[in-house]
Length: 257
Image 1: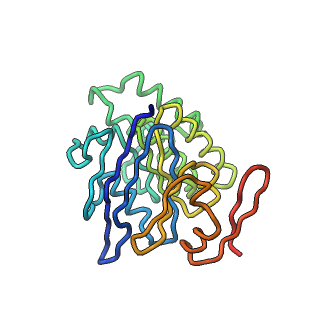
Image 2: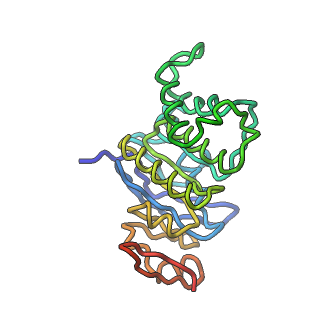
């Protein structure tokens, strides 16, 4: 039986009197890939931030590995949950390698020296995410796509049990979108971890996620298997625009009419 990583009970979120989600109940087990969909402003980012403990919830309880998240020390929380922010603001004058090593901070045993295992994991991530040749460059010299790959590499070396991804395809061209998400999902599965991926791209969610949370507005939502939630009717309602689908080579693609 697979272990439950995240258990959400009757979660309600509001911003400035607007209800983003009401009475959200969700259970996520090992090796599940969840897509988080909905139009702009519906609350995808706020929900991810709440699951990371970066935003207070209005009511409900969030359990991580059976413990209330509100009771977990910050360091323990950082070993369980990692987040890829939609936008990255790097202010430290650090190199690419030094930045990737920051992902190991929750696991560091000594502040005086780098552990050889941490260095090994960082070097492997640099190679996996095509960053080896720029390992010594300072991050303020990087392009948007390079910064996004760096953020993904740092998240992987953190090795959390739950990966929260906010628009992971930002700044990546089509080839890198597929290559990086293929790699990331392989790494997550190899760690018996799970992910929640917030995205505006229905087709990326359909490609990489077996379960879907669809925020439909006014606090309402649909959740469940991809085939059940991602229908023309549900998507058209959620995005307030007619969405149609077409089956091509064992995939279903969605497009606005």
